[in-house]
Image (cartoon, rainbow, N blue to C red; front, side):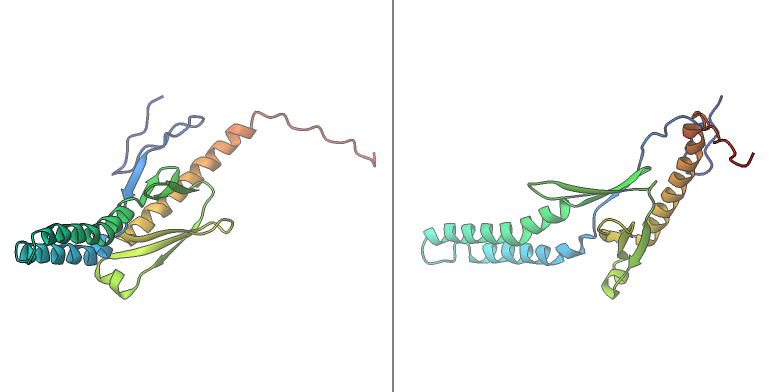
Amino acid sequence: MTDAPTQGSRLAAPPPGMAAPERLVARTRGSARRLTWSALVFIAVAGAVGWFFDNLPAPWENWMLFAAAGVVVLLLVLLPWMRWAARIYTITTRRVIVRSGVLARHAREYSHARGYSIALRRGPLQRIFRCGTLVLSNGLDEPLRLVNVPDPALLQEVLADQIEVSQILVHREVPATYGDMPVPARPPDPTG
C-alpha cells in the first residue's frame, strides 16, 4: 500500500489502523509589544548612566550609579522579558499546549480529538499590532487563553482545521477498534 501524495501543504492521512504521528504545526509567543516600556526604560537607563558617569562629585558614587542602574534594568527590563519569553504556545497535530513559568514550569493542553470552541477577541491596540487573544473552551475545563498571538485569524483557522482532521481520524478509527468485538447475543423473545 502506498501513501497518498500530499495536496498543497496538507499532510497525507495515515492508512486506517495506523496511528498518526504527532507533528509540530506552530510554535509562537505573545506579541512583544508589551516589552515597549521595558525597551524605553533600558534606553533611558543607558543614557542616564552615560551622562552621569564621572560627573558625580565622589568616585564611589559611580559604583552606586551602576548598582542602581543594574537594579532598575533587572526589575523593569530583564524580569518582564523573561516572563514574556517563558510563555510559549505550541500547536501540534494532536493538541494545543500552553507552557509558562520562569522557575516553575506549568503546562496546560487541549486535545483536538475532544473538540473545543474557538473565540477570537481583538481590542483596538491588538488590531493595530495585528494580534489578538484566542479563547479555547471545551465546556468542561477552564478556558485556555492564547493571549496576544500574532495573526490570530490564521491561527484560528489552523486550529479549526486540526480539530476537523482529528475528528475525522477518531471517527475513522472507531469502527476498526470496535469492529473486532463480538456482537452480543439477543435475549430470547418472550412472546414466542
